[in-house]
Image 1 (cartoon, one colour):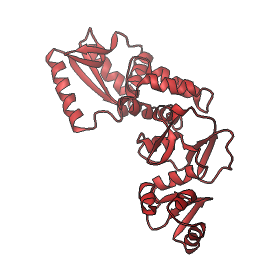
Image 2 (tube, helix red, strand yellow; image 1 turned 135 degrees about the vertical axis):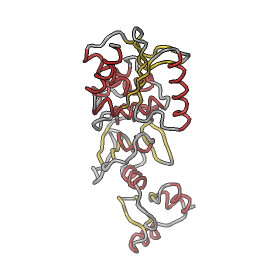
Image 3 (spheres, helix red, strand yellow; image 1 turned 90 degrees about the vertical axis):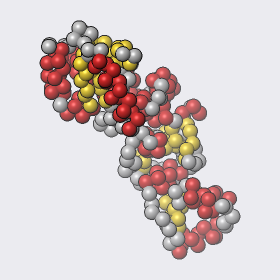
Image 4 (tube, one colour; image 1 turned 120 degrees about the horizontal axis):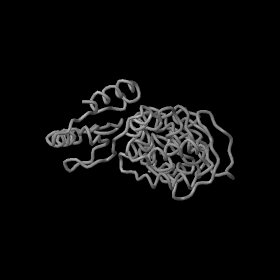
Length: 285
């Protein structure tokens, strides 16, 4: 039973779990004194016969605050697979009436969460995907790509709004509202929203979003020029199946006499002037 705990929990376990597995308090203390177990915090241990992974670090940080604590912010985003790298500082949320001091390597936020905003994955309590997205997206520069990935994974925009409204007044709430409002601009990814922003700043008009052509919805269409603009978000079209589907889609649109331009997130963020120049040349033909 002990090995099962360790295998499922990245080598981390709590004192109650150790007792549940049949160990006595004295047996736990002997393992700590011998160096076989590392005490991460009071009542939380890591069995030091394996690498101390990011998953172990996040788990230990959250469990250090007790059974009512949850991973939140970028820590929850990483656990959900919305970001590639675990944050150096683990954000933990616990109820307002919870006790405990802030521990090294973690950032504590105190607030009461709705049950709809808490899930458990691999034995760790964390904020649900929708709340995680609206919080993590404003934690770092360029965090809109977290919302982009979520929307591309079929997380409904209405679910993001509901999570946001259930948690008004939290840290970062105004910035999250601005991102959500941008997501309502008729474009489905952060990259598309950025492209629309560039169009408006450049004073370019005559375009429609999600316009049907050849049985497909074109991201942005210029009807007078018969120009279809396809925008690729950071996490979009990365699989072989999607790559092939994009080519079939582009060929079908081209055969109807439309010109197709593709821009990536990198184009829009690093070379916006070049994007506008290319587009202006295409619609002026």
